[in-house]
Image 1 (spheres, each protein chain N blue to C red):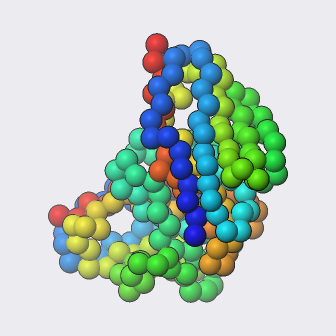
Image 2 (image 1 turned 90 degrees about the vertical axis):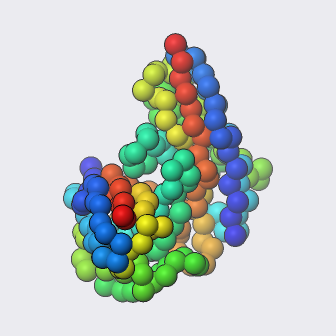
Amino acid sequence: GAVVSQHPSRVICKSGTSVKIECRSLDFQATTMFWYRQFPKKSLMLMATSNEGSKATYEQGVEKDKFLINHASLTLSTLTVTSAHPEDSSFYICSAESGGTTQYFGPGTRLTVT
Amino acid sequence: GQNIDQPTEMTATEGAIVQINCTYQTSGFNGLFWYQQHAGEAPTFLSYNVLDGLEEKGRFSSFLSRSKGYSYLLLKELQMKDSASYLCAVRGRTGGGNKLTFGTGTQLKVEL
């Protein structure tokens, strides 16, 4: 149980374009989903917390207009990187929890902006 | 805010026992997690401690002392596949909501 999927697993896009990453909880309803960013050999940095049906709460320093988060249902959250630039290249990971204590992580999305 | 410290790297021998320490400072403690992360993959949940003491789960055990702001992850009968990064994460109430703050991770290398 507690499986979280992400799509796509890898994406390469050109500078200036937008990329959407999907995060789905497959066998449970996620009241809260989290989006993290991880640089090579670094730890996970929380970008935002999203609750179904409400606006995401962004961490300090994260541009909400650049990283659009939509949590339309209890099993799906999306992160859209708008007008991507090379410095946005990173490993993006989502996690989900169902009102309990444990966050379960998706497999991650490797974004490369050229 | 929250501050989490763990060693950057550790090396151990197959079949041995290794202890990975984590110290933290937080305002509003609500649990400590250990995750395992292999390179290029997402973290997988290992253990959760919210009360003082030892939690044992197979070859993995995790200990918490809230008064000392200290936890450790104990791995027994090490296997080569245990080579990975081990992340200590603290759940806190800072800023509203129960968010996880991660340490930088301890890269464990298991050798023959």
